[in-house]
Amino acid sequence: MKKILNYMLIVLGTVLLTYSCKPSDYYYGEYLKNGEIYYPGRVDSLSIIPGNQRGILRFKVTTDPKVTSVRVYLRSSLSPMAEVKNYPIEASEHGKIKLITLDALSEATYTANVYSFTSQGDSSRSVASSQFIYGQSYIRTLVNRSFSKFDKANASEHFLVLARENNLPRQGTFYPMQFTEVTYRNNSGDSTTVRITPYEDFASLKNIFSPSTVKYRTVYKPVQASIDYFYTAFTEQKYSK
Image: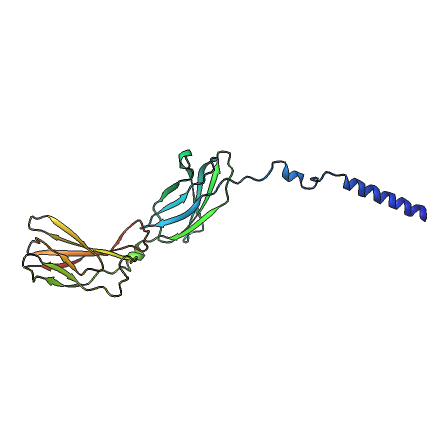
């Protein structure tokens, strides 16, 4: 019995010795053959600037000199499918702001996932940004300013008077209503357009031809960064001295 026990101890010791003699990376050395995983530099400050059924993808290109292109996956909230496009990155663009135009978009929320790529096909981690793109549904919510009267008190200069806007923010603060365009025909037969802000109620009709038609529309931006203006339909008013 004692001999059997001694034999078992010898076998166990041999096994332990063999195990302890394996190199330290025996169990994970396969993962170290290619060194650490390399991820190219990612884009920075990614955003989608909205417009009227279009947008601009804005980001800062990485300073990583190995990056030669970016791949954009653009998804709409109206579809599960992503539109995939590749854009080259020139050496002079590293570390600088790049703008990519996005045309023919639907009125929906879009999400862009952007990856940097090297010429060898190495990919960075994803950077994402989302933004609502505006269109006809938004335009249908816009309201033109209300006509009040023509002010003819000053014989040399008449005015189109609009109803005063209420609850305006302090000037300098963003307000979706940007301005109102007033168009009329002058005595020379030419079309004249003047603009007034939401804080103004009078539009000068200097040298207006009589009788004629004055038309006006109000112009909006849904957000301050919008690349497009959005217009109401024209309202027309008959004018005569």
